[in-house]
Image 1: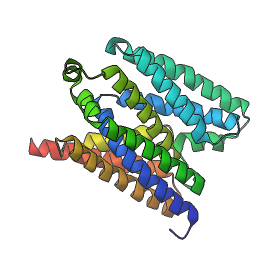
Image 2: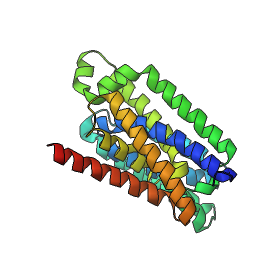
Image 3: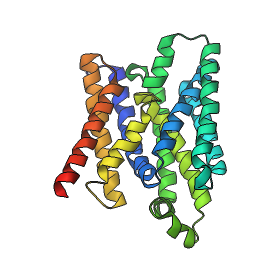
Length: 263
C-alpha cells in the first residue's frame, strides 16, 4: 500500500491534519463553536469552488474564503446574542457564491464531489508541504496565545475580568480555525471536516479533565480515524471520509457508554 506515492502523501497529510484537528477541536468544544466549524466547512466549499473558477489550487481558495469569513464573523459577533445570526448570514452569502463559481467554472460533478467529500488520491507532494507549513503556522500561533486562549475558551467571564483581550483572542482563534478547516478538508472534504474537529475532542472530555489531556486523547482518536480510514478506503475503494466518520462516531458512542457506566 505504501509503495504508492499517493498513499504516502495521504498518510503524511492525514497525520498532520489529525494532529491539528485534535488540538483545535478541544478549543472548538470549549468555546461551544461546533456550529461555527460546520459553517466554515461550507464556506470552505465556496472557497474551493472559487479556486477552481480561477484555476487556482482549491486549498488557496479555501484559505481566502475561510479566513475572510472568520474575521467578519469575529467582528460581527462580539455579542453572543447575535453570533448565530451573523454566522448564518455570512455562510449563506459564501455558500451561494460557491455554487455560482462552480457553475461558471463549467466543471463536472467529480470536481464538486472531491471538494465536498475529499480525495485520497488527489494530494501531491507540494500540497503535503503546503499543509505542513500551514499547520505549523497554526501551532505556533496557538503556542504563543496558549494561556489566554485556554482561559478564554473555558472561562470566558473570568478571562474578561482578568483583563484578557477576549475580542482579539476570538479573532485569532477564528483565523486558526479557518486554517485548520481549509487544511483538513483536503482529506475528509469540506462537508465532513467538523467530524475531526468535534468528535475526538467531544470524546476526550469523558476520559480526562485537563486541557492537555483532552488534546492528547483527541489527537489519538483523530489519528486512529484517519489512519484506519485511509487503509479501509484503500482496500475497499470506498470513500475515506465515510470510514473516518464511522470510526469517530464509534469512539464517541464508546465514550458515552463509558461515562454512563462510571456514573
